[in-house]
Structure formats: structure tokens, C-alpha cells
Length: 389
Image 1: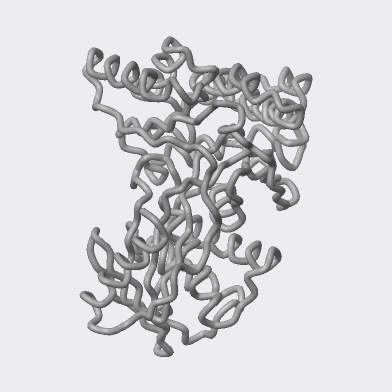
Image 2 (image 1 turned 180 degrees about the vertical axis):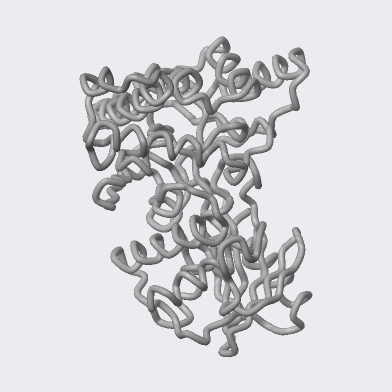
């Protein structure tokens, strides 16, 4: 959906829900992660790309502590003062948590509330960060409405509030990569997210000039980060760092890994250490213009996620294996895993053929038929859409 279409749809939903006009409409993109998976909470490096697909929120400010939230998934009404870990649950947690976290950080008044209507073009449950898109769209809306800074430093503060909402209210123990790309993405670029020092930097990624595209494969296998498995992986990484006497695995080396006696923590840590190095090598290749040459690094990332981190599944493995067999330069799962999406770096002319091969093999293996997105230039960061008249 274009920005104009998103604005019109969100405005229409707001009018239907509340019988009035919103103060405005804001949007934030979903993302795919090119490489650097499960390392953001270990102080690592990631290279996400903003999608062209965004989530929009039509918002009207209130001054009575109340939130009224509406989307195609349902409705929630409540007081911000009553927001707490796990309350509310489900999609409203990501919105209510943002206002709660922004209040805590002093980014909005203690009585701020809002009426919010949501429309989204980001597939839900596909591992494409629909939750961060939702959070960041509302965060930029609240910031605009109350006059909070939205420059680079201001967006960093908003990203931190969104991470707080996701970790402490929605109880999803994610890192900060998704919020960083949603708030700081740039068209035609990936974003280098350094979770060690919190900095971000755009990295040129002109796929079209190289005759390439990223095929996003939504396996439609349910992707959930609050069922305990994601938290277990994060906990194992933190325990491995503690065993090695380092603050994060960003500071560990291959030589350090032999000191981990238990095989499971060793494998988890090996993924993190090698994945961070793969990101560094990807950056070197992109700087030299050798985009095709990053393909083997993407594939090695998937193997590590599958074997050492154990977050893949049959649907993701089918997507990766089928894309590679069809001639993709490289392929990997993207996102938290246990379902969700994979990406394949392919020649632009081969996108449809590779997609058909993935689809055919999924059907042959009795898997759910996947859906596909084509990523060319990438999307833009959280923004105000066409003003409501």
C-alpha cells in the first residue's frame, strides 16, 4: 500500500471506530534482516533492511490517561496507569506499552492518552517485525503530537522506549534491531545496527544496479517470540558470556569457545561469535561492490542458525534449500526463527522462477504454501503520512 492508501485506510477506520477525525496518520515499516541474527542482545552487529510494507496508525491525543485501540484484530480500552507486564496481552500490549514507556522516559505527559486506529500492510506472524512497526508508528505519532524530538537522538530515545514496551509489557525478550531499522531506515540502504554501543549507520545497498533482488519467503509457519523458546536462546547466550567472564559475546573469540564445557552453550555461543564475523565480512564485500559474493555468507548464517542455534524449522529449511537449488546466490532464515520468513538473494530475472520452485517443493513435502515479497530498494523510516484534511 502506498502512503496515501495507508493514510486513507487508517483514517477511514478511525472515523468508523470513533466518529471523528484523527489528529494525523503516521507509519513505520516492517523489516527483513540481511544478516546478523540473534546477536543484537549479545552486543553484536546486524544489517536489517526496511520493507516497503508499513503499519499505519491514525491517532487523536487525549489528556485523560485513556487509551482506545482499534484494529482488524479487535479493540482494547483502558488506562495507561493500569498498564503492567502482560497487561494488556496480544497486539494491544505493543501500543499500550509504548505510551507507558514514553511516559516513564519523560517523553510525554503523565496524563497523555490517545484514540488509535491501526491498518497494516506488514504480514503478521511472518517474522518481518510487524510488532516493531506497530510500536514505532505510534511512538513517532506521540512524539509529533507532544513535540518530543524526532531527530537522530530523539529517534534513539523512541527506539529505547519501544524496546521497553516489547520487553517489559508484551514480554517478548527481543533486542533492539527491529526498532532501530523501523525508526532509522533509509531507502536504498541497509542499516548497520551496532548493539554494543547503540549506534546506527546507513550502508548503501543498490540491488537493482547489480541486477539483483531479495526474495522474501513468508513460510506461513506461525512465528511467536513469547512461547519461551526465544527467551531460552537469549538466556543461553547470556549464560555463555557469564561463563567466559565477558559482558557480552561480542567480546568473545573462537579461541574462547573451547572453554565452554557444555556442548549446548558452546554451540549457541559459536553461532553468535561466527555470525558477528559474517556481518563484518558482508560489510567488506558490500563496500567493494561485490553484492553477489555475500550469498555464501547468507547461507552459512542459515546453517549456523539451523545447527548451532536450532531456531529453524522444516518450512524455513525448505525455503532455503529450494531457493539454493533454483540458483539463488544465497539464502537464510530471517527474524527470530521457529517459523516466519526466509530470504534469498537472486538475480532479478529469476525471482518468479525461484519462487515457483520454493512453492512447488513446499506442496510436494506437504507444507503450507508460502507467500512471497520482492525487495528492491527497501523502504523508509517511521514518518508522518499525508496530513489528514
